[in-house]
Image (tube, rainbow, N blue to C red):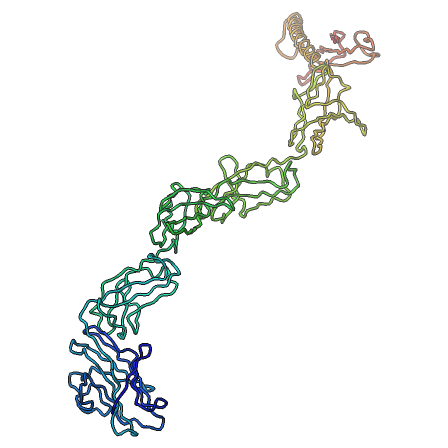
Length: 607
C-alpha cells in the first residue's frame, strides 16, 4: 500500500491515504536525534487510528529497506522475532497512544533510522510511519555553553540557559544530571538547564552528564554571576562577655562578585555616625565603657555595597559610686535620714552593703540601695559608706553624717576649788555638749523664787568676792536648736579674817604655853616644904592651864578682861588661867579659888 509523509513545523506525520479524520496516523516530534555513546536516548512517537478500529499489533523496526514485515524487530507487542542486540535495552511505553521508547546503553551501531509499524483490524496490512526517526550516535566530549538575556556579563535578574552538547550534536532527547561545584544538583529531561532572574546563589562551576552514565561528565564551566555584597555579617572575637580593659576584634564577612574591595567601619550614636577605621578587621585594645554601642561595617565592590552591624556591650565593675543624703541640709536629732547609694555598673549592681566606721573599727549596718535611720541621735554621727558590687567587681563610697542637737549634759565647774574666802576671785565655767557648739551662755543666780541674770559667756568671773555673792548659780547653754540649763552650784563665801585669826591665836597660845611652863617651874623651885625643905611627893604645887578663846563682834559687858571693843571691830580674846591644885587625902588635887593671876590676850583683826 502506498504511503505519504508530511512534515509540519518539525513534526513528521505518516497518514493513510483517503482518511485524515479518524485516519491511521504516526507522528514523530523529532526526525533527527543525536545521542552519546554509552548514554540513553528517548525516541518520541505518537499515533492515532479510527475510533471504531482495534489495534492488533505494534512494533519498532530499524533500517527497513523493502520488506516491512521482515524480522528482526527491536520491539514487537507480541514479543516475537526480537533482535537479540536490543534485548534488555528497549523500554517501550504505551500511554495514551504514545509509541515512544527509551534506548539505553547506546552503541555506535545503534545509529540508523527507526520506524514504528501499527496494524488494525480494519486493514489487512500493517502500516509503517515513514520516514521514521534518524538516530546519530556520537563519541565526543560534552561541553556546557551559557547564554544570557543580558550582556556578556551576567548580573542579577538576568535569564540564563546552560546547554549540554557536543561539537556536532545536541542530545536533547537524553536525560541529564547537572553538577554544581562537583555535586549533583539538578536533573533534566533534556540537555538544557534554564534559570530565570538569576540570583547570587547560582554563582558556581557547572558540568553535565547523561543521567544514566555520569562517568562521561563534561568539563566545568563557571556561571559568573556579578552581584553586590550580600550576606554581610560581623563577628566578635573573643566571643562571650566583653570586660573593660580587654581587647576585642570585629571581623566583617561578605559574599560578593567581584570580591569586596573596601571594608569601612562606623559607630553610631543615635543619629550621629562616626567613621572608626577600614579593613576587614577592626580591633579595640584596652576597651572601656565608652566603647559600648553599635558598630557596623560597609562592604563594597564595583557593583554596590551592603552594611552589617553588631552591638558591643562592655561590662565593668561599679564606678562613680556616690552616696546622697535625704533630706539634704542639716540633720537634726530626732529626724529621719535616708542614705541612697548610686553607682554606674554593667551589669547593674547586684548588691549594696552599708557600713559605719569608727577609727579602725567597721560595722555592717544593712543592705539595699537605700539605708534609713529613723529618729536619728547624736550617736549616729560618723562616717558611713556603701559598697556597690556586681559580677565584675566592687567599689565603695562614703559620706559623713553630722547630727546636730541642742545642748545637753550642761554643768558648771568652780575654780579654784575648795573654800571660797571673802576677797578672793572665783571663776565659774559652763560646759555643755552641743552641735553646732553653743552660741550663747547666760549666767543666773537664784534667791528664793527670784532669778537674777548675772552675765554671759562660757566663764563668769567674780573678783573681790564678798559674802553677798554667796548663793545658787547656774548657766544656760544655747544654740540654734535649743537650750539647756545646768544643775545649780552653791557658792559659799567664808569670813575674811578666820584664817588670819586662827594663825594669830595659834601663835599666841603657843607663846603663852611656853611662858606658863617657865612660870610654873620657877614657882615650884622657890616654895619650901613643911620642914623648910622641898618635898618630892604630895606637897609640890601643881599648875593647871585653861584656855579660852572668845570671839566678840559686839560690845562686851559684864566680863573680866579688857574693855569692850568698838562695835565695828571684831575682837578675839584668849585667856589662860593658872590654878594651883591642893592635894587631898588620896593624893589628888583640888582646885583652888580663882586666882587673880589670869592672863588675858586680845587680838584685833585689821581689815
